[in-house]
Image 1 (spheres, rainbow, N blue to C red):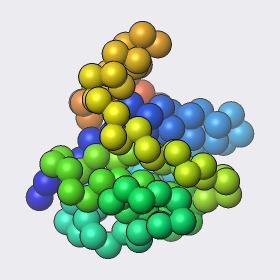
Image 2: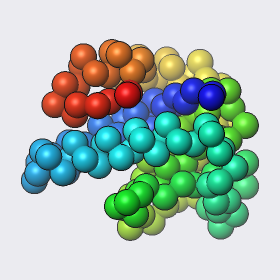
Image 3: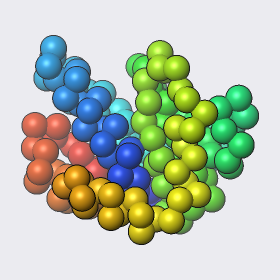
Length: 139
């Protein structure tokens, strides 16, 4: 099975989702973050199962609904190796049409921008060590 990876923006989305939910209920945050990881792990086995949203982007990306919560869209590039998770956005958001357009940017620009603001891409093992309160990350 092909692996997956989070883009810097998707990883930032994941952290913000966890922090937002944890401000009210830490256990609920753990459940949602685990569900996001579980859904991401399932994408490589059927990358074309997500839906196409021509109303939001002309890019060849797919949208997978987070189950069982139905609260977030996981937006990913089914043609990338490993599968790139581009964004994780709440379903109630008014998703701007440019929310996924950075795919066409030079990746070195995204890496430099992330480093400038202290954003580092973590491996699953680094995520587990850095975020132990979200147990099950990267499993």
